[in-house]
Image (cartoon, rainbow, N blue to C red; front, side):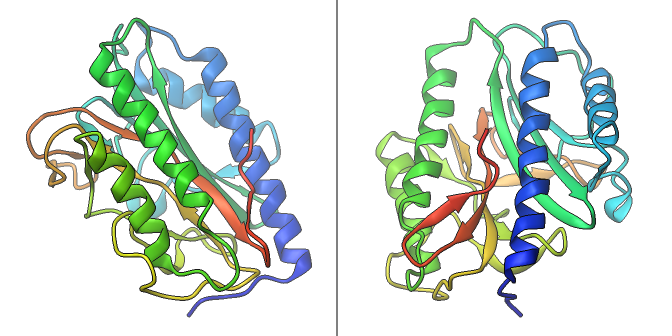
Amino acid sequence: MIQIKSTQEIEKIRRSSQLASQTLDYAASVIKVGQTTAELDRLIHRFILGHNAVPATLGYRGFPASCCISINEVVVHGIPGPRVIQTGDLVKVDVTTILDGYYGDTARTFLMEPVLPKARHLAETTEKSLYLAVETVRHGSRLGDIGEAIQTCVEKEGFQVVRDFVGHGVGLKFHEDPNVPHYGRAGTGQRLKAGMTFTIEPMINAGTWRTRILADGWTAVTGDGELSAQFEHTLLVTQTGAEILTVS
C-alpha cells in the first residue's frame, strides 16, 4: 500500500535524506586508492553515528555492514571487506540513514581517476538518466514515464538497464510501495500522487543487463563481468514536479 506522507513526516524524511547526502559528501572526501572497502565502511559508520543517526543496512536481513560498496562488475549490495580500491575503479557507495526513525537513501558512483573512457561514459550516462527520470516526476505522471526516460537514455549509448533491482518507496520504512522499475513504457504503470516519497536508482551495465548473486547471498554482479554504475536519489512528488530530498 502506497503511503502519502504528511507535512510533518516529509520534513523528517527530508532531514534524514539530507544527512544521507552529507554522508556521501563525506565519503567523497575520504575515499582513496589503497583503502579497503571495510575501512571506508568504518569511516561512514562513525560519521552516521556522529550525527545522531544509525545506518539502515547494518543488520538489515543479516547484512553485516553500514553501507553497500560495489566496485566495477559488482552491480549492487557489495559487502565491505578486504577488497582494495584501485586506480581506475568505479566505486558505488549506497547509504541509507535512519534519523529520528525516518529514512533517507542515496548512492553515487565515485571514479578513482584516471579511469578508462568507457567507464567514464557509463557513469556519466547513468547519472544523466537519473536526472532525466526526475524530470518526468509530478502529480499525475506514471511510473512508466520514469522507466522509459532511463531506458531510452542508456540504450541509445549502448548500455543496458538492470531489471533485477528497482527503486522503491522509502521514508517511514526502508522499503515501501511502490516498486520503481528503471525500464518501461511511458503512460503505463501506477499514477504518482503528491506526497509520495521513493527512490530512483538506475543500475546500468556496460554489457548484458543480467546479473547473478554470489554465494554470500547479497553481492550482485554483472552476468558477463562488465562494468556497472549506479546513482540514486530519494524524491518527493509535488503538484508541479519532484523535490530531490537527497540533494548535496
